[in-house]
Image (tube, rainbow, N blue to C red):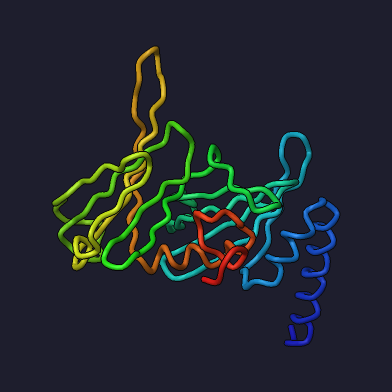
Length: 218
C-alpha cells in the first residue's frame, strides 16, 4: 500500500470519527481531543445502545484512555501488560462544562509550593489515601520507611522527604460486606514527571483544584 493511500484512509477514518462524535451530541469535547496526538479511537456500545468513543493515548510509562459519552468525559490513567490488559491506577470524570464529578473519580493532585509538596485527593466520600515512601528511588520495590495519612483528604510534607526516595499513593475505600466494614486498597507508584504528564490532556477541566489550560496556563 502506498504512502498516499495510507494518508487517504487516515483522512476517511478521521472524518468518519468526527461526524459520529458530533452526532452523539459531544462535539465540543470531540473537537478538543481530535486535535491531540491520540493513537486511535475505539467505539463501545452500552446496554442502552448508546455509543461511547474511546481515545487512546500512549506515552512513556503512562497510558491514558479518554471515554466520551453524552455529557460526560472520563480520563483513565494506568498501564498495559503483555496481554493488553489495562490496569486502572487513577481516573477523573467530569462534565462537558469542565466540572469534576468527585464521586466518579479517584485521583491525587500533586503540587509543589516553595519547599513543600502538597497532595489533594479528588474522590468520593468513602475514599481516602496514604502516602508511602520507600528507600529506593524510582522503583516499586524496596523497604517501606514511612507512611503518612492525610487530614481531610489533604496532605503537605517537606519536599526534602521525597528526595532520593520512591513514593506511592495507597487508595483506601471503605465498604460493607456481610454487615462488616472492610477497606479496599489500591497502591499507585508515581513521581513528579508521571503526575505532570497525566495533566497533559486535561485541557477541558475548569476545576481550580487542577491547573489546566482551561483555567490557567500549565
